[in-house]
Length: 132
Image (cartoon, rainbow, N blue to C red; front, side, top):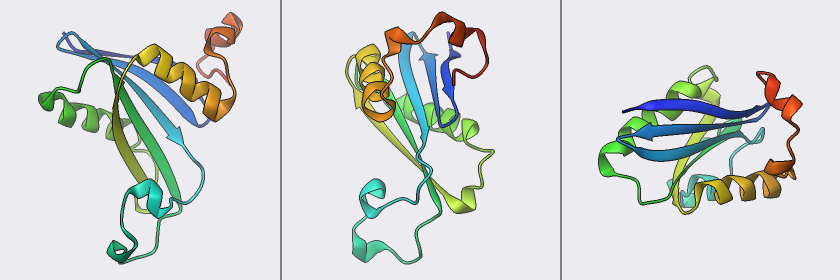
């Protein structure tokens, strides 16, 4: 069974759960609202042949187990569909995969990046399409 569910939506962050063949993946899509650096893109300086784009959107895909080979393309396509509305000629979309406890990974991401404690998000914030 395949399905997806948006868990959180902020102005510059969305978190989704995706189930593929009973394997759960948690995807965090973050609009960094800044130009990418070479470090963001994992590209050596000598490989740059043009200017960096205006913005970077990081996509982090978490799973309890190593991502299945046959799921990589599906997850990549899903992430690209969610970011398809941005001006891709001016944005870099960087997708990275991580293995570990998905709940803890997202809680840590929210705390480090946004200073939000997931368990402290008020229920009334979850009544709306956007949790800002």
